[in-house]
Image 1: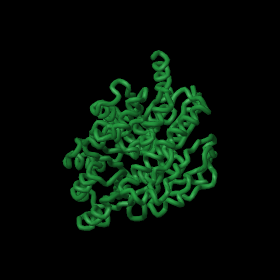
Image 2: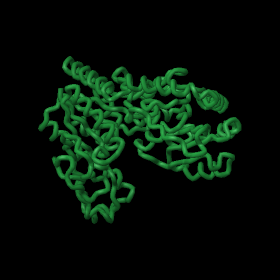
Image 3: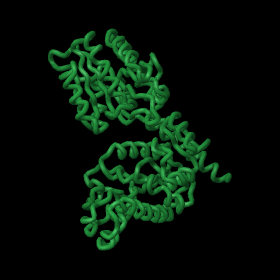
Image 4: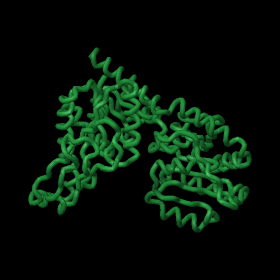
Amino acid sequence: MRVLHLLDAAVLRPTDYRSRTLALIEQLRAQGVQTVHLAAPCLAVPSLSALPGLSAVCADATPHGAAPAPHPGRCDANLPDPGWHIYRTAAPAWLPAAVLQRLPARHAPALSRAAAMAAFALRVRRVARLTRPDLIHVHAGHGTAMAAFPALCGARLPAVAEAGRRAADRTLPSWERWALERAGALAASSAELRAALRGAGLGGRRIRVIPPAAEFAGTPRRDPAPPGLADAPLLAHAGGLEREAGIDLLLAVLPALRRRHPALRVVVAGGGAREDELARRIGASAMRGRVAVTGAMPSRRVADLLPRADIAVFPALCSASTPVASRHLLNAMAQGCAIVASDIACHRELLVHGHSAMLFRAGSRHALAETLARLLARPALLPALGQAAAAQAAAQHSWPATAARYRRLYQDVLAQARRG
């Protein structure tokens, strides 16, 4: 079985998307699946003044690792070679600046997307003729989603498409929706997301739940506490700072916890538009100097930080925007962290209350405060929670397990295509 993987342009840069994609493909290859890899063009829209000198993202059919081109979406020549070839898609040539300058500025993004989609569709057909795959796997990513419509239309091959939370949005453009409906099967990362996709009229019985894999596993690294803070409990929260992530709920319970545990410290590994607002709020509260907001961090650095805390807290609220658990939660499980999480559906899929984590009623300040206070008062319970979480992640959320689920999905789609 040979599978053509359509990848976002981010796979050519040092991103978390790249590391996750390469890990999955390595395991698929280890399980006997032949893979071909094609990266979409970068959809960055340059300013009109830069258009005349715009060059291709990368040369056509150049092996990964070649010299980078002078474009914001270029690949990084210093990235380690994965050991197999990644086809690339050259950025489309632009119309003369004299023509573009007569168009309203708001049309430039749409023109960029249309040109990139057309270039990618032609590239898919060429690579498919060259490599003769049995099936196409459309990976999640903004660039691949944008190009899915013409790519699937022209290739005429059975396809598996990864459907993210954006696909469940009823405002999804009609041509993207058509592309998802064209796929032989959709892969959703949680049962909650599958329900959201069905509610949006997508997929029906063609949706397969494939739980994501933890990116970072192994023995947790617990550095000794700084002098004077050996007995100071430390809480950690990783993720976005939006209200749906529950950060406001966590900050609201800290003053009461501090009255029971005066040395309590909190680190928030995340950043975003609300970073300054939260910094001002913390500075004006009783937790001043005891809550640190790190700002945006790569997943690798967050994974190094979480095991240093006594408890990793994931207080996401129940909302339509959270049908998928945070990847930081999966990494916390794999690294053996003691976890406290809200009881929203996607958390209940991953965690067993009282065994691999402690769950509390989502949105309840009282429930979160009591759960944290109970664990901080009995620190001997924390190692058992962490060990159970690590064992569960190793059994159900490893890259070999995820690759095996995709391999079975490929086989089912191909069997259905032969019957049909």
